[in-house]
Length: 270
Image (cartoon, rainbow, N blue to C red):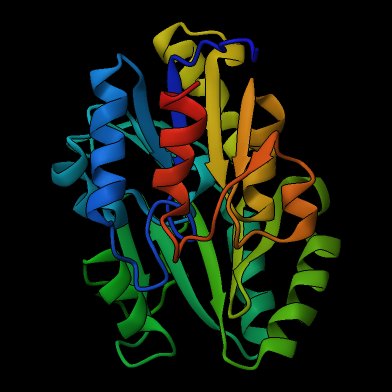
């Protein structure tokens, strides 16, 4: 007979995990989260999205836990009051913008709760605005104010350019910042300590629960740091083999209710 594990908190990634390919939060996923709460298990979300980009989850999931955007670069209360942030040093942000532009990428800057772009018709701006459900601020120069920057993003549909720029950024910034593609067309530059493992550690301190009683679920390499610190970890069916190898178990795809099934089978049924 399997040993019943104690789970006090579930920490979930959003895109590719909690929502499906169409960015829809299904009724079954909502019901699973409400069942967690009914079982006395807290539920929190973390994402590469800005915190405001998760606002649409607040009401259907009745979220009452801190929301960790930018993979932990900015943590806010459900009313978007900032409670923790790990910013990109201003000189690194300036160098990142120069590097991204040098590779021919469009540049976005996330500063506090604001999303700054140079042009409203730039690549992926409309799609990102649809995804996160809020509009960017169009500014003359995204490099004008670089204090309190949570994330700098390079954007291009020329995917080989993004890949080459990622390699150059990793070489350029070394230990001073993290450079990773969150999508094939997005290169994110964030604080070196902004990662989902740090999110888990923040929530463990915030709620006073042991890491051994935290379950995590995700689909990307950016989710692996929280897998490694959690007592139990679940990889989505749409995750790569490398990501699945880092998790305790795997569930079905995000297009086949993988999140809800994982909660039902591994957490609520555990």
